[in-house]
Length: 197
Image 1 (cartoon, rainbow, N blue to C red):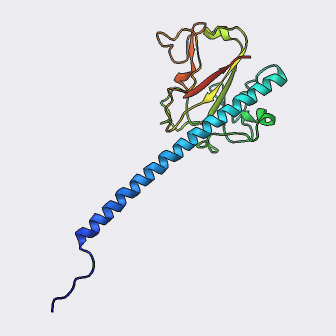
Image 2 (cartoon, one colour):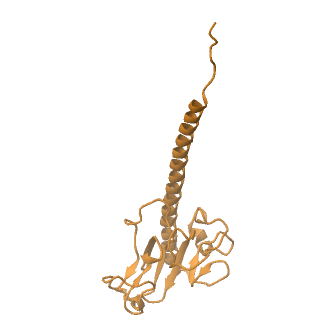
Image 3 (cartoon, rainbow, N blue to C red):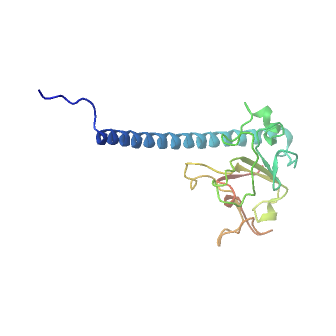
């Protein structure tokens, strides 16, 4: 009497395991991409709220918030969104439903300057600076203005985002700009916008 074989061979098991591994890696990659896109969408929404709050602040005070250079909020002279009590965004709290912070910047400080590659340096933050005069960088106005934006996106194409630039950009303005000639903040941030009263 022939004995019936029950179960799987080793090759069948290996094939099934490799298929399951392939499918799970595809799913995990898709989930990570979706999470990155969701964080990018939140950054864009936060930036719209911050810009509205800065406009309301200007209406009430006749100027944009000063740059404080205080502890826990300054990087190379810029106000940067750390998630702590001294966050520069706290000045805008009366105009915001809650103080925003970058989804990946949870309690850590940016680790280096703006000119390193992004986002490989893991520096995800919102930034703000209040300039005394537009003419310093070749902007077409002489009054004070502010620049607001965020350091880096993860998964979104940055080409269609606002780029803050002043002065002639052809040939490209070098990093940091040239005094009284030009300035290009887009070399440092994926999203940057100039706020002029």
